[in-house]
Length: 67
Image 1 (cartoon, rainbow, N blue to C red):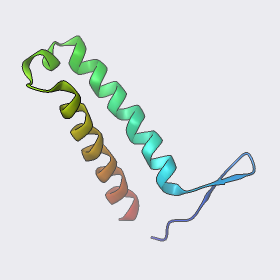
Image 2 (image 1 turned 30 degrees about the vertical axis):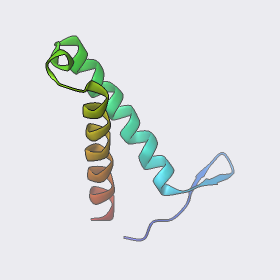
Image 3 (image 1 turned 180 degrees about the vertical axis):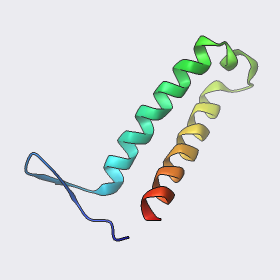
């Protein structure tokens, strides 16, 4: 698949920017769920965990879109 620009209200946006926003939204939801169940208290560095989850979600979105 070829990545093409997305037209948002007359402004062309790179597809990577749309994927970044989608990954950010999914990561926020996962972080809130982890905080609600107390999972973030059991990790050594919560910010590092959230960042790595963001990277995993972003790479998954990119791979699914490119497939």
